[in-house]
Image (cartoon, rainbow over all chains, first blue to last red; front, top):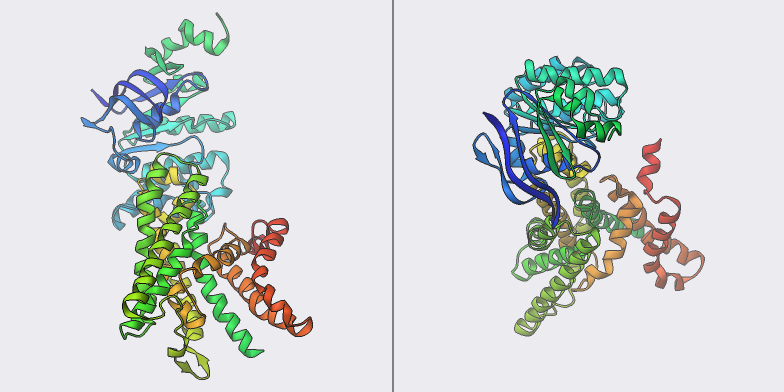
Length: 237
Length: 297
């Protein structure tokens, strides 16, 4: 049973339509990978779920509750954590201020619990807790961005291009973290990636999104062999 | 000379309170707020009305904070928030603040005319300095404006840096969409910043009639110095506003007074040009404000 799904979604920004008839679902405690070329509408899919994009028709459902029309901050408080691709940390605040802010509607005890949890997940953040977040390295920033999402004890985490612009070694580390989020933190993950191959290796289910429509839904390994995928990513026609 | 300096400090404190709101709003909503002129004038007429009713006009600082805060909130919820939701450009938002300012200017004029015709009082020339008190040789308005500036700055510092609401406000200043994704009600935080900015302008306005002759158009006269102080200090740092307020305030009063002794009294006529000259020089040489020089060190 999917914890989060969209039904016949047409959405975009204002009058501009980006997504066409999207039936997407994320299975509970699994990693769902969404791949596709630049401009396919991957980020818009996440924006539709989080209430940022305009839904023209269709519905978004999380734990049997319709999310259409809800403000983004309410959706964030319901247990959906969103880690955007750009500007995903508050650079002028310290690491700990970032984390505290993300959990600002938790009680003090809960907040401390979550802080400890995030620090145990990412010890490097504890070490740099008083440092201004803007001074962290690329990999550390991603850890902090994921940490921000974790503070609210979410059930679903939406990760947008979380490995982009990172060195291969760091990419591996970040993807290992994503797997840990599923296995240890028992989270449902939606992983949006432009660089598909390595993300598909850790996925339980995959979608291929092209020009705002779903072209493939199913096993990630099979997608790697899908003709459309080869065409888009390897230039083989 | 000492008298001019004290007068300059009073003016600078009032200017700082006004500029503080402009910087705050620029940081949160990214809008240059022209309606700040009206927020100030509502403060003026709040303390004037209290004085007419026989109360101490200094009570107007508290009431003026609330009245102008509410006037600012109305602007935010009636015009800016609907426009922001429609993703209107900053230019449109800025024009909306100007429109609102003209509307409020009309309302204040109606109120002044009403007082004047109904009660036969000179409500178009508001001057409360004769009612002011003196303490150890200092005018009340000097003591109150400087101490209120210090207290309000400290409270603002505590709010922004020591409370979770302040952290949320800073988050909204830095990255509204990420703040939203982290469960922060951005609209509510923006509303708070408008209330605070309006309130600060109201406090300054409430004190103005104790310092100078005011009328419904005083806000329009002061809007240029307000913006100038805010830009001179640096729009990227809230505490740049009082810095800009003091540099500009003292330049307008003390510097011009000193120059009049050196060059001649005719220069006094041109004191209104000080903000504009300062603004041009700032924009060309230190576009990020004086505070950027200090922070670099």
